[in-house]
Length: 431
Image (cartoon, rainbow, N blue to C red; front, side, top):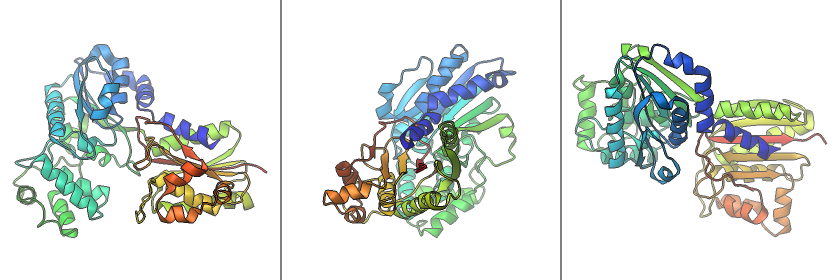
């Protein structure tokens, strides 16, 4: 059961089907008043599948387009009207700049009677960019890495990145103005903040140059960044460089931004399927964050409660959560956040009959491994002990991959072509 629900959640986030179902519903509304042509642009790990769907439905109206996707995915995608740029991820490079410039040139071509369809998904921040002023893409990359290593969150990171770019933070919408712009997004950001997905190229940016400087000061990085980065931000703070387009800017009058696939949308699809299968089903949260092994205990605790007292729903029950946990690596083993969460949960539900827990990355990759995650039940730890394996040792060495390799429980989906973070399922059968 858990496995079929996970596959349902991944299917709901499939870029081709998500765009197809959006366009089949909204096509006529989109094309209203569009006398000219359609241009298609975008960047991200799921953008290839999104572009394929746009071509299959609107092909005859498309005049041109450019998308940037990870180099290793270019072989799998062939489009007739839209140019595909292979680019780099997670570190941007000159390829990202070439792609960013080609995208900007494409939207500038579009006129008042044309429609620009923008397609953004996770990874878009690195795959396409256009640095401001005399800043190089290497310098932007160095700042990003320094911020991540200092523990800055995605919102802080984007505040800085948007102010070093003429692509992110609403700039793309400005370049496209006065055309009509419809941006479709697949969200890999917990909470689906649109200005954060791929750094929001078509979304108003509420943050300022001053905010960006504040973030660098907070992490004591202002003196460590390159002089061209510092100079540009300081120029911006004195109003000598153009600020990112803000909420209320008239350029956004013709811009529509929509999230068409996300963690919560996948959880909703999973809930519907669970109800069809005869379970009581409940979505607890799509905002799950925290250390994977701790979250694993919490998930196990919910499973125990359902089994013992029927709260918050009675068996047969499916409880769904999603989000993105983290792992603080202290050991030398192999694993990923989903396998670690599942191993920790398995230790807490040892001996419980009729309970299963699955934790899976929707992109099909959990950490640096070839699996998507793992599924456990009350027997998992017992099986390990029968083989003389100590689950605690595997957990403390961050070695969840080898644990499941030995005991069984790996979930393999292959690369899914989408990413809406992690999907976690509790199934409690009626016993």
